[in-house]
Length: 209
Length: 253
Image 1 (cartoon, rainbow over the protein chains, first blue to last red):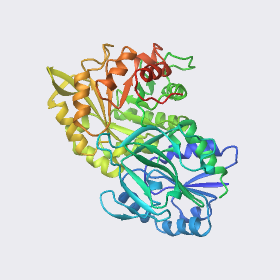
Image 2 (cartoon, chains in turn blue, yellow):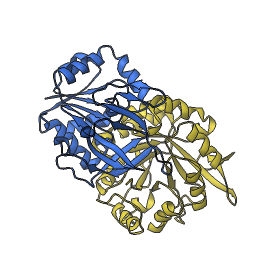
Image 3 (cartoon, one colour):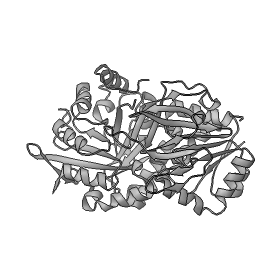
Protein backbone atom coordinates (compact mmCIF):
# COMPACT_ATOMS: atom_id res chain seq x y z
CA UNK A 1 0.00 0.00 0.00
CA UNK A 2 1.27 3.45 -0.85
CA UNK A 3 0.20 6.33 1.39
CA UNK A 4 0.78 9.81 0.03
CA UNK A 5 1.07 12.92 2.18
CA UNK A 6 0.55 15.92 -0.06
CA UNK A 7 3.41 18.40 0.37
CA UNK A 8 2.34 21.88 -0.66
CA UNK A 9 4.65 23.81 1.62
CA UNK A 10 2.19 24.02 4.48
CA UNK A 11 3.29 23.14 7.96
CA UNK A 12 4.67 20.24 9.84
CA UNK A 13 4.75 17.14 7.68
CA UNK A 14 7.44 15.40 9.67
CA UNK A 15 5.22 14.36 12.60
CA UNK A 16 2.41 13.21 10.32
CA UNK A 17 4.85 11.22 8.20
CA UNK A 18 6.29 9.48 11.27
CA UNK A 19 2.86 8.70 12.70
CA UNK A 20 1.66 7.16 9.41
CA UNK A 21 4.92 5.21 9.10
CA UNK A 22 4.51 3.83 12.61
CA UNK A 23 0.91 2.72 12.10
CA UNK A 24 1.55 1.53 8.55
CA UNK A 25 4.51 -0.66 9.43
CA UNK A 26 2.48 -3.83 10.04
CA UNK A 27 0.48 -3.24 6.88
CA UNK A 28 3.63 -2.91 4.82
CA UNK A 29 2.56 0.61 3.92
CA UNK A 30 5.00 2.86 2.12
CA UNK A 31 4.57 6.47 3.23
CA UNK A 32 5.57 9.10 0.67
CA UNK A 33 5.66 12.87 1.15
CA UNK A 34 5.27 14.38 -2.28
CA UNK A 35 4.37 17.42 -4.32
CA UNK A 36 4.26 15.34 -7.51
CA UNK A 37 0.69 15.03 -8.87
CA UNK A 38 1.61 11.76 -10.61
CA UNK A 39 2.54 10.18 -7.27
CA UNK A 40 -0.75 11.39 -5.78
CA UNK A 41 -2.65 9.80 -8.66
CA UNK A 42 -0.93 6.46 -8.07
CA UNK A 43 -1.55 6.44 -4.29
CA UNK A 44 -3.76 4.00 -2.39
CA UNK A 45 -4.37 6.53 0.39
CA UNK A 46 -4.10 10.32 0.23
CA UNK A 47 -3.55 12.63 3.22
CA UNK A 48 -3.85 16.41 2.96
CA UNK A 49 -2.37 18.18 6.00
CA UNK A 50 -2.46 21.94 6.45
CA UNK A 51 -1.47 24.54 9.00
CA UNK A 52 -2.08 28.25 8.82
CA UNK A 53 -4.69 30.47 7.29
CA UNK A 54 -7.27 29.06 4.85
CA UNK A 55 -6.53 31.47 1.95
CA UNK A 56 -2.75 30.89 2.26
CA UNK A 57 -3.22 27.11 2.28
CA UNK A 58 -5.57 27.22 -0.70
CA UNK A 59 -3.16 29.44 -2.65
CA UNK A 60 -0.25 27.14 -1.78
CA UNK A 61 -2.19 24.09 -2.94
CA UNK A 62 -3.12 25.80 -6.20
CA UNK A 63 0.50 26.85 -6.68
CA UNK A 64 1.53 23.19 -7.13
CA UNK A 65 0.99 22.71 -10.82
CA UNK A 66 -1.51 19.95 -11.57
CA UNK A 67 -2.16 19.05 -7.91
CA UNK A 68 -5.81 20.18 -7.71
CA UNK A 69 -6.58 18.21 -10.89
CA UNK A 70 -4.75 15.13 -9.60
CA UNK A 71 -6.65 15.25 -6.28
CA UNK A 72 -9.94 15.61 -8.10
CA UNK A 73 -9.17 12.68 -10.38
CA UNK A 74 -7.92 10.41 -7.57
CA UNK A 75 -10.45 11.24 -4.85
CA UNK A 76 -13.64 12.13 -6.71
CA UNK A 77 -13.39 10.00 -9.84
CA UNK A 78 -11.39 7.00 -8.65
CA UNK A 79 -12.55 7.00 -5.03
CA UNK A 80 -9.12 6.83 -3.39
CA UNK A 81 -9.55 7.05 0.42
CA UNK A 82 -8.72 10.59 1.52
CA UNK A 83 -8.02 12.21 4.90
CA UNK A 84 -7.71 15.97 5.44
CA UNK A 85 -6.10 17.20 8.66
CA UNK A 86 -6.79 20.60 10.29
CA UNK A 87 -6.85 23.19 7.47
CA UNK A 88 -6.51 20.23 5.09
CA UNK A 89 -9.92 19.18 6.44
CA UNK A 90 -11.34 22.70 6.32
CA UNK A 91 -10.45 22.94 2.63
CA UNK A 92 -13.01 20.19 1.93
CA UNK A 93 -15.66 22.88 2.47
CA UNK A 94 -17.47 24.93 -0.13
CA UNK A 95 -16.18 28.26 1.18
CA UNK A 96 -13.76 29.57 3.77
CA UNK A 97 -14.30 32.95 5.43
CA UNK A 98 -10.96 33.46 7.20
CA UNK A 99 -9.59 36.91 6.20
CA UNK A 100 -11.62 36.80 2.97
CA UNK A 101 -14.02 34.60 1.07
CA UNK A 102 -12.02 31.74 -0.45
CA UNK A 103 -13.33 28.80 -2.42
CA UNK A 104 -12.64 25.39 -0.91
CA UNK A 105 -12.54 22.07 -2.76
CA UNK A 106 -16.31 21.73 -2.15
CA UNK A 107 -16.10 17.98 -1.57
CA UNK A 108 -18.20 18.26 1.58
CA UNK A 109 -20.72 21.12 1.53
CA UNK A 110 -20.38 23.79 4.20
CA UNK A 111 -18.64 26.92 5.38
CA UNK A 112 -15.53 27.52 7.46
CA UNK A 113 -16.44 30.18 10.01
CA UNK A 114 -14.87 31.75 13.10
CA UNK A 115 -15.34 29.97 16.42
CA UNK A 116 -17.90 32.09 18.27
CA UNK A 117 -16.98 31.87 21.93
CA UNK A 118 -16.98 35.36 23.44
CA UNK A 119 -15.95 34.21 26.91
CA UNK A 120 -13.39 31.67 25.75
CA UNK A 121 -9.86 31.90 24.44
CA UNK A 122 -9.30 31.64 20.69
CA UNK A 123 -7.48 29.72 19.23
CA UNK A 124 -9.18 26.65 20.64
CA UNK A 125 -5.92 25.08 21.75
CA UNK A 126 -5.43 21.84 23.63
CA UNK A 127 -7.15 18.57 24.43
CA UNK A 128 -10.91 18.30 24.11
CA UNK A 129 -13.17 15.27 24.49
CA UNK A 130 -14.90 13.95 21.39
CA UNK A 131 -18.62 13.36 21.05
CA UNK A 132 -19.19 10.72 18.38
CA UNK A 133 -22.23 11.71 16.28
CA UNK A 134 -22.33 8.70 14.00
CA UNK A 135 -20.36 5.48 13.80
CA UNK A 136 -17.74 5.34 11.08
CA UNK A 137 -14.86 2.94 10.34
CA UNK A 138 -12.45 5.83 10.97
CA UNK A 139 -13.70 6.04 14.58
CA UNK A 140 -13.54 2.33 15.30
CA UNK A 141 -12.26 1.85 18.85
CA UNK A 142 -12.64 5.57 19.61
CA UNK A 143 -15.44 6.51 21.99
CA UNK A 144 -17.25 9.58 23.18
CA UNK A 145 -15.09 11.04 25.95
CA UNK A 146 -11.76 10.22 24.29
CA UNK A 147 -9.49 13.25 23.91
CA UNK A 148 -7.84 14.70 20.82
CA UNK A 149 -5.49 17.68 20.35
CA UNK A 150 -6.88 20.77 18.65
CA UNK A 151 -5.34 24.06 17.64
CA UNK A 152 -7.51 26.29 15.45
CA UNK A 153 -9.54 29.48 15.45
CA UNK A 154 -11.97 28.56 12.65
CA UNK A 155 -14.33 25.67 12.23
CA UNK A 156 -16.10 23.73 9.49
CA UNK A 157 -19.90 23.99 9.65
CA UNK A 158 -21.16 21.20 7.40
CA UNK A 159 -24.33 21.80 5.37
CA UNK A 160 -25.60 18.23 5.72
CA UNK A 161 -25.65 16.89 9.31
CA UNK A 162 -25.09 13.41 7.90
CA UNK A 163 -21.50 14.48 7.15
CA UNK A 164 -20.73 15.33 10.78
CA UNK A 165 -19.07 12.30 12.38
CA UNK A 166 -17.87 13.83 15.67
CA UNK A 167 -17.73 17.16 17.47
CA UNK A 168 -16.39 18.72 20.66
CA UNK A 169 -17.89 21.36 22.91
CA UNK A 170 -16.23 24.78 22.96
CA UNK A 171 -18.77 27.52 23.54
CA UNK A 172 -21.13 25.28 21.55
CA UNK A 173 -20.53 22.39 19.19
CA UNK A 174 -17.30 22.55 17.18
CA UNK A 175 -16.85 20.13 14.28
CA UNK A 176 -14.13 17.53 14.95
CA UNK A 177 -14.53 14.85 12.25
CA UNK A 178 -16.34 14.99 8.90
CA UNK A 179 -16.85 12.36 6.25
CA UNK A 180 -18.78 11.10 3.27
CA UNK A 181 -18.06 8.18 0.94
CA UNK A 182 -14.26 7.86 0.56
CA UNK A 183 -13.57 11.34 1.98
CA UNK A 184 -12.89 12.20 5.62
CA UNK A 185 -11.24 14.93 7.64
CA UNK A 186 -10.27 15.73 11.22
CA UNK A 187 -10.04 19.20 12.72
CA UNK A 188 -7.74 17.81 15.39
CA UNK A 189 -4.24 16.55 14.77
CA UNK A 190 -4.23 12.74 14.90
CA UNK A 191 -0.44 12.80 14.68
CA UNK A 192 -0.38 14.79 17.94
CA UNK A 193 -3.20 13.03 19.78
CA UNK A 194 -1.23 10.13 21.26
CA UNK A 195 -3.07 6.77 21.33
CA UNK A 196 -6.42 8.14 20.09
CA UNK A 197 -4.80 9.81 17.10
CA UNK A 198 -2.67 6.80 16.22
CA UNK A 199 -5.79 4.64 16.36
CA UNK A 200 -7.56 6.93 13.89
CA UNK A 201 -4.57 6.77 11.57
CA UNK A 202 -4.57 2.96 11.73
CA UNK A 203 -8.31 2.98 11.02
CA UNK A 204 -7.75 5.20 7.99
CA UNK A 205 -5.08 2.84 6.65
CA UNK A 206 -7.45 -0.11 7.07
CA UNK A 207 -10.50 1.73 5.74
CA UNK A 208 -12.18 0.21 2.68
CA UNK A 209 -14.89 2.70 1.72
CA UNK B 1 -14.88 20.61 27.21
CA UNK B 2 -11.37 21.92 26.66
CA UNK B 3 -8.93 20.69 29.28
CA UNK B 4 -6.23 22.60 31.13
CA UNK B 5 -2.80 21.52 29.95
CA UNK B 6 0.24 20.48 31.96
CA UNK B 7 3.50 21.13 30.13
CA UNK B 8 6.85 19.86 31.41
CA UNK B 9 9.66 22.08 30.15
CA UNK B 10 13.13 20.76 29.37
CA UNK B 11 16.00 23.24 29.42
CA UNK B 12 18.46 22.12 26.79
CA UNK B 13 22.05 23.23 26.28
CA UNK B 14 24.33 21.77 23.62
CA UNK B 15 21.89 18.94 23.01
CA UNK B 16 21.66 17.89 26.67
CA UNK B 17 19.02 18.40 29.34
CA UNK B 18 20.30 20.84 31.94
CA UNK B 19 20.09 19.24 35.40
CA UNK B 20 18.74 15.98 33.97
CA UNK B 21 15.46 14.23 34.48
CA UNK B 22 15.34 11.82 37.38
CA UNK B 23 11.74 10.75 37.78
CA UNK B 24 12.11 7.45 35.99
CA UNK B 25 14.95 5.10 35.23
CA UNK B 26 16.21 6.59 32.03
CA UNK B 27 19.22 5.05 30.40
CA UNK B 28 20.49 8.56 29.74
CA UNK B 29 18.84 11.17 32.01
CA UNK B 30 20.48 13.94 30.02
CA UNK B 31 19.06 12.98 26.64
CA UNK B 32 16.15 15.32 25.79
CA UNK B 33 14.60 12.76 23.44
CA UNK B 34 14.46 10.10 26.14
CA UNK B 35 13.06 12.60 28.63
CA UNK B 36 10.42 13.71 26.13
CA UNK B 37 9.43 10.10 25.50
CA UNK B 38 9.07 9.49 29.21
CA UNK B 39 6.83 12.57 29.58
CA UNK B 40 4.78 11.53 26.55
CA UNK B 41 4.22 8.13 28.15
CA UNK B 42 3.42 9.80 31.49
CA UNK B 43 0.53 11.72 29.93
CA UNK B 44 2.00 15.20 29.49
CA UNK B 45 -0.35 17.36 27.42
CA UNK B 46 2.49 19.05 25.56
CA UNK B 47 6.26 19.15 25.85
CA UNK B 48 8.46 22.23 25.72
CA UNK B 49 12.15 22.41 24.78
CA UNK B 50 13.98 25.58 25.68
CA UNK B 51 17.39 26.01 24.11
CA UNK B 52 19.08 28.04 26.83
CA UNK B 53 22.32 28.79 24.99
CA UNK B 54 20.92 29.01 21.51
CA UNK B 55 24.13 30.00 19.81
CA UNK B 56 24.21 29.81 16.07
CA UNK B 57 26.72 26.98 16.21
CA UNK B 58 24.49 24.60 18.17
CA UNK B 59 21.34 25.10 16.10
CA UNK B 60 22.02 21.95 14.14
CA UNK B 61 22.03 19.96 17.38
CA UNK B 62 18.63 21.42 18.31
CA UNK B 63 17.11 20.58 14.91
CA UNK B 64 18.38 17.04 15.25
CA UNK B 65 16.83 16.73 18.73
CA UNK B 66 13.50 18.07 17.52
CA UNK B 67 13.51 15.70 14.56
CA UNK B 68 14.27 12.68 16.72
CA UNK B 69 11.64 13.69 19.27
CA UNK B 70 8.95 14.14 16.62
CA UNK B 71 9.74 10.65 15.31
CA UNK B 72 8.90 9.10 18.66
CA UNK B 73 6.49 11.41 20.50
CA UNK B 74 2.98 11.97 19.20
CA UNK B 75 2.23 14.88 21.50
CA UNK B 76 2.62 18.60 20.69
CA UNK B 77 6.14 19.98 20.98
CA UNK B 78 6.98 23.66 21.51
CA UNK B 79 10.54 24.83 20.92
CA UNK B 80 12.02 28.14 22.05
CA UNK B 81 15.35 29.84 22.57
CA UNK B 82 17.28 31.88 20.03
CA UNK B 83 14.38 32.16 17.57
CA UNK B 84 15.02 35.36 15.66
CA UNK B 85 13.10 35.32 12.39
CA UNK B 86 10.49 33.52 10.33
CA UNK B 87 13.37 31.52 8.86
CA UNK B 88 14.16 30.05 12.29
CA UNK B 89 10.45 29.28 12.72
CA UNK B 90 10.33 27.51 9.39
CA UNK B 91 13.44 25.44 10.14
CA UNK B 92 12.05 24.32 13.51
CA UNK B 93 8.61 23.52 12.07
CA UNK B 94 10.22 21.49 9.31
CA UNK B 95 12.31 19.65 11.89
CA UNK B 96 9.10 18.62 13.65
CA UNK B 97 8.19 21.33 16.17
CA UNK B 98 4.47 22.12 16.41
CA UNK B 99 4.89 25.54 17.96
CA UNK B 100 7.82 27.91 18.04
CA UNK B 101 8.42 30.50 20.72
CA UNK B 102 9.85 34.00 20.22
CA UNK B 103 11.37 35.84 23.14
CA UNK B 104 13.97 38.64 22.82
CA UNK B 105 13.43 39.01 19.08
CA UNK B 106 9.77 39.88 19.65
CA UNK B 107 10.75 42.48 22.23
CA UNK B 108 13.26 44.04 19.84
CA UNK B 109 10.73 44.06 16.99
CA UNK B 110 7.15 42.85 17.53
CA UNK B 111 6.72 42.70 13.75
CA UNK B 112 8.65 39.40 13.69
CA UNK B 113 5.51 37.95 15.28
CA UNK B 114 3.16 39.15 12.54
CA UNK B 115 5.68 38.19 9.90
CA UNK B 116 5.80 34.60 11.21
CA UNK B 117 2.05 34.38 11.98
CA UNK B 118 1.18 35.53 8.44
CA UNK B 119 3.38 32.82 6.97
CA UNK B 120 2.71 29.87 9.25
CA UNK B 121 -0.50 30.76 11.09
CA UNK B 122 -1.04 32.06 14.61
CA UNK B 123 -1.59 28.55 15.92
CA UNK B 124 2.15 27.80 15.88
CA UNK B 125 3.50 31.14 17.11
CA UNK B 126 4.13 31.51 20.84
CA UNK B 127 5.60 34.60 22.46
CA UNK B 128 7.54 33.98 25.67
CA UNK B 129 7.32 36.95 28.02
CA UNK B 130 9.76 37.20 30.92
CA UNK B 131 8.39 39.75 33.37
CA UNK B 132 9.55 41.17 36.67
CA UNK B 133 7.65 43.17 39.28
CA UNK B 134 8.85 46.79 39.31
CA UNK B 135 6.08 48.18 41.58
CA UNK B 136 2.91 46.70 43.04
CA UNK B 137 0.65 45.81 40.11
CA UNK B 138 3.32 46.83 37.59
CA UNK B 139 5.49 44.43 35.65
CA UNK B 140 8.20 45.02 33.09
CA UNK B 141 9.69 42.88 30.35
CA UNK B 142 13.23 41.69 30.98
CA UNK B 143 15.41 39.95 28.41
CA UNK B 144 18.67 38.00 28.48
CA UNK B 145 17.52 35.60 31.15
CA UNK B 146 16.01 38.33 33.30
CA UNK B 147 19.15 40.48 33.46
CA UNK B 148 18.27 43.22 31.01
CA UNK B 149 15.37 45.59 31.74
CA UNK B 150 13.57 47.00 28.73
CA UNK B 151 11.23 49.53 30.31
CA UNK B 152 8.35 47.88 28.44
CA UNK B 153 5.14 47.22 30.38
CA UNK B 154 4.41 43.49 30.33
CA UNK B 155 0.62 43.75 30.05
CA UNK B 156 0.84 46.29 27.23
CA UNK B 157 3.40 44.11 25.45
CA UNK B 158 1.13 41.07 25.76
CA UNK B 159 -1.67 43.04 24.08
CA UNK B 160 0.69 44.09 21.30
CA UNK B 161 1.95 40.60 20.47
CA UNK B 162 -1.59 39.20 20.62
CA UNK B 163 -2.66 41.86 18.12
CA UNK B 164 0.35 40.95 15.96
CA UNK B 165 -0.94 37.41 15.64
CA UNK B 166 0.67 35.41 18.45
CA UNK B 167 -1.40 32.30 19.15
CA UNK B 168 -0.32 31.88 22.74
CA UNK B 169 1.73 33.56 25.47
CA UNK B 170 4.24 31.72 27.65
CA UNK B 171 4.48 33.95 30.69
CA UNK B 172 7.39 33.53 33.10
CA UNK B 173 7.65 35.47 36.32
CA UNK B 174 11.33 36.25 36.77
CA UNK B 175 10.65 37.05 40.45
CA UNK B 176 9.41 33.56 41.05
CA UNK B 177 11.40 31.42 38.61
CA UNK B 178 13.36 28.84 40.57
CA UNK B 179 11.94 29.88 43.95
CA UNK B 180 9.26 27.17 44.30
CA UNK B 181 7.12 29.86 45.94
CA UNK B 182 4.34 29.60 43.39
CA UNK B 183 3.34 31.51 40.26
CA UNK B 184 3.12 35.28 40.37
CA UNK B 185 -0.67 35.25 40.44
CA UNK B 186 -1.41 39.00 40.00
CA UNK B 187 0.89 39.12 36.96
CA UNK B 188 -0.58 35.94 35.47
CA UNK B 189 -4.13 37.14 35.94
CA UNK B 190 -3.40 40.64 34.60
CA UNK B 191 -2.03 39.19 31.35
CA UNK B 192 -4.51 36.32 30.96
CA UNK B 193 -7.38 38.79 31.38
CA UNK B 194 -5.82 41.32 29.00
CA UNK B 195 -5.61 39.03 25.95
CA UNK B 196 -8.02 36.67 24.20
CA UNK B 197 -5.33 34.09 23.40
CA UNK B 198 -4.29 31.30 25.81
CA UNK B 199 -1.66 32.07 28.45
CA UNK B 200 0.72 29.46 29.88
CA UNK B 201 1.80 30.23 33.45
CA UNK B 202 5.44 29.54 34.26
CA UNK B 203 7.97 30.20 36.99
CA UNK B 204 7.89 29.24 40.64
CA UNK B 205 5.97 25.99 40.92
CA UNK B 206 6.83 24.11 44.10
CA UNK B 207 3.59 22.39 45.06
CA UNK B 208 0.55 20.97 43.32
CA UNK B 209 -1.59 23.72 44.83
CA UNK B 210 0.53 26.20 42.91
CA UNK B 211 -0.60 24.57 39.68
CA UNK B 212 -4.23 24.89 40.79
CA UNK B 213 -3.78 28.57 41.71
CA UNK B 214 -2.27 29.34 38.31
CA UNK B 215 -5.55 28.31 36.71
CA UNK B 216 -8.22 29.24 39.26
CA UNK B 217 -6.67 32.54 40.38
CA UNK B 218 -4.23 33.30 37.57
CA UNK B 219 -6.71 32.39 34.82
CA UNK B 220 -4.00 30.53 32.87
CA UNK B 221 -5.04 28.02 30.17
CA UNK B 222 -1.99 25.85 30.80
CA UNK B 223 0.69 25.43 33.45
CA UNK B 224 4.35 24.82 32.79
CA UNK B 225 6.78 23.37 35.30
CA UNK B 226 10.22 21.87 35.25
CA UNK B 227 11.93 20.83 38.46
CA UNK B 228 8.91 19.37 40.31
CA UNK B 229 8.57 16.87 37.50
CA UNK B 230 12.24 16.37 36.61
CA UNK B 231 13.24 15.58 40.19
CA UNK B 232 10.32 13.24 40.62
CA UNK B 233 8.73 15.31 43.39
CA UNK B 234 5.40 14.76 41.64
CA UNK B 235 4.34 12.78 38.60
CA UNK B 236 2.24 14.24 35.79
CA UNK B 237 -0.58 11.92 36.87
CA UNK B 238 -0.44 13.18 40.46
CA UNK B 239 -0.53 16.76 39.25
CA UNK B 240 -3.51 16.05 37.01
CA UNK B 241 -5.41 14.20 39.73
CA UNK B 242 -4.80 17.05 42.16
CA UNK B 243 -6.00 19.68 39.70
CA UNK B 244 -9.03 17.60 38.76
CA UNK B 245 -9.90 17.20 42.45
CA UNK B 246 -9.82 21.00 42.68
CA UNK B 247 -12.49 21.15 39.98
CA UNK B 248 -10.26 21.96 36.99
CA UNK B 249 -11.13 20.05 33.80
CA UNK B 250 -8.16 17.79 33.07
CA UNK B 251 -7.39 15.04 30.59
CA UNK B 252 -6.85 12.04 32.83
CA UNK B 253 -5.22 8.87 31.60
